Length: 263
Image 1: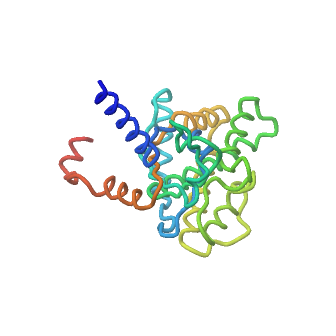
Image 2: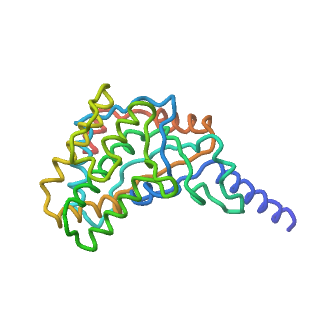
Image 3: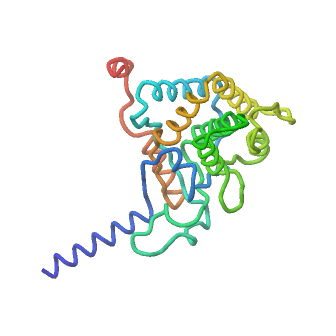
């Protein structure tokens, strides 16, 4: 009996230890772009690399899913995050406490930067296209408020998603203020990542301008509440790199025949 109790206590301790070092959760877009998440790109992360083709594919997939299967959850893949240095001290310490609990804190994006930044651009375009109506309906006003909370932090009103250096400043310039997506930027893009960011922003705006108000509202609701990712969070960069290698390098690559059969 004593051995059984001891074994049970050891298992509980191990589970708590694992939970503090590694957690994953399926989250809808409106949960991901919300407290406690503040997203930053670490210094070693590559510059923004998605282009018009990648954004076009993402938009087409979302639009198709929202039209054909509006009640189903649309899966956008997994992202890998690591708590920024110094964050652990601010986390709750009670038994069963989670990385997801507490106030807003910074997560560095190890894998998934391109998707998170591109989704933040799409949400900014949503905010501005919904807000162009002089007399929006109550339901639309609620969506606009939700989008504003998704794009800026509650405490400091800083961007929820940010890139480092000049590219980050340009992203904020093109998206930050309400209505920013609907006007040409005052600053000229001076790097390839900046040209990509602006090109994707303008592509999304062009696509959304052609939608009727009801169609746009339904699409926004679908993206916010029916599109989901699996967020994997850990507490140290060493664990994050190990997980990254497991997620991206393990397993036998699919052959062309395998892919054709799946299609």
